[in-house]
Length: 250
Image (cartoon, rainbow, N blue to C red; front, side, top):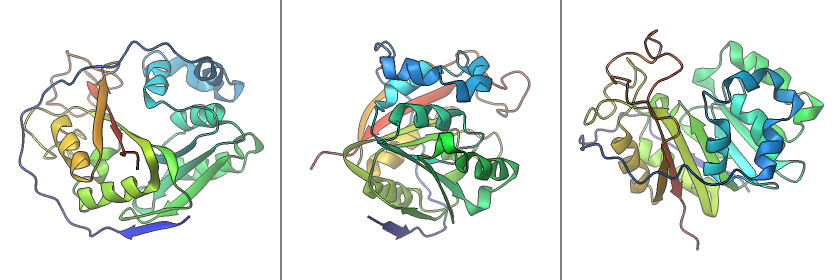
């Protein structure tokens, strides 16, 4: 199944809203298939970051399971992808989207990764940022620390509607990003690389999704929200929200 919906390149002006902290979902038991995937020898070099990045808690929150199809937006170094690959197994698939505008050194490394037999169920989709082209509907759409990069480069609600169409009924959309000051909207997206969580919630719900909860595993109350995420005072330890949205079952 091919899903294509062009998205008009334009900044979306939405009013700032007060930031709230939805009920957190952090204490679910970690499934054995997640634990086993985290121990995959192919991600040996990643394990040093698992505690800081709360790998087990995040994967559990996504609801991913063996046999699922996953769409990952801007996979970066492949830290999350290597676990997705191990969880879904040979009966599942991981589609990774590299927008043309974001291609860099990591992209060259990614071409090598998808050519490795161990990652035979990982596909590379390189395409314009404003046009999401997916071969089949998926169970999970996931993006970590990239939603703020999409914002302002296009009509973000229209983009989220393409995500909606890419998901199976009942499928989940999980977004992780760096927290910006309450009420700041997307004004810090290009400078501090942050975004107001309440704006993200408003964006995604406007596309038809139902908010399905938050996870506080990556929250950090000592982050002032007023410095760049690359600032030495917060680098690697920014305050991050994890939101889960659900496409209604039909």
